Length: 214
Length: 262
Image (cartoon, rainbow over all chains, first blue to last red; front, side):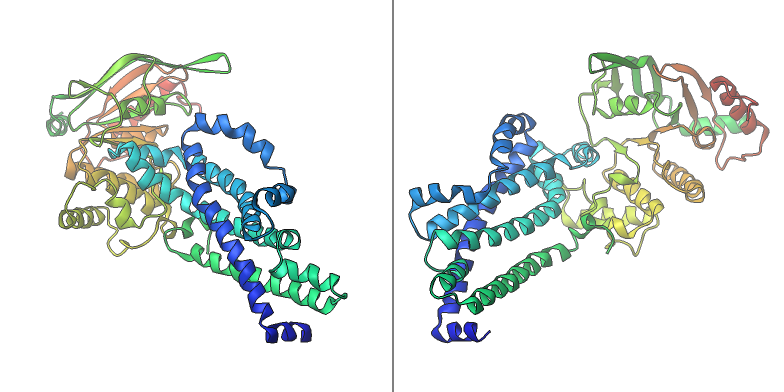
């Protein structure tokens, strides 16, 4: 704790936290923005989904950390490298959850939509979209968790700032285990805060139906 | 006899629905299952027809074909002389209560099909049908906050709100408890008498069919074919201990091969 106070005094703690959050924000948001439309598309067009499924299944079991050397090769040591790793880690799980979300929309609801004279596009907007939102929120929550896990690992290798770097640096620069433990606690608290923030979305009236009884 | 003619007068003689030689064969894993076998029937404008048959006999498939969700393997279906090509808001399919959109309130569900109306008209329609099914005060409730019977009412209101001329009901009260079910039958009759829609009602409940329908179409087990059509035409409310009621019920039991067994 004293170690953290010392860092905070130097302004380094805030700088590292901001650096980690900055990478997570960009890596995670770019994954969200790209993965959800791709997943929804592949879920809605089953043939396309089946075509891409083998590729997805091969890429899925690869830990994002395995990409570290390539990412450094492509993007150098810096923010972009870490952002790329976070993107890689959260992209596929998001695509898969979005695909599953579309596939699990009840045919009863799709048929009801068609019955009331909705066009294909209207069915997507008025039936599929509201039906998948709860699962997408859940998937985003999990992906954010993954991003926060990955940023720490990425920072240990691919950059020179952030909470992950702090841990490695504290050990290398004279076995400052107080700083290591301090950083671990910081990571835990910020992770909890991020999760709580996304969980707030689950309280909206129009999605609560999907989360069981209150 | 006099009663019969009064009841008949309520439905016009105009043919609303004509099902002509419809067969349906599903193939799955290289095996073919014949579900419907040369089914032909008609329903008149404003008539309440029950399709009665054992579970899994294909009566729901028939209803899905009439609704335009499934194409028959052979035969054709005409409504008002036009062949059915797909789902159409003029004939609304009412699922069991699970058909409601859980992300919308009662109001949102009832107004779901009214996207072409101005907001004033829409509000008026919603209010009218919410009242018709007796759910005033629940406009802003979500389906998860409602009982099974109330959800079923919302489905009926949602269907009626778009002013269809036909309702297709697929075992709508099957999941309700027996008291609610009786209550819902009475409600449905009241609504039918007020709105005069043609109703095609699929059920496996003999009592239900005799209580509700003008005509009961009795189907066999798979592949389903029509065994018999019974004209009921008793005025509502029906006395379920009257001789005619019991005769009709026994007649159906016998047709299905269950007479005096239980």
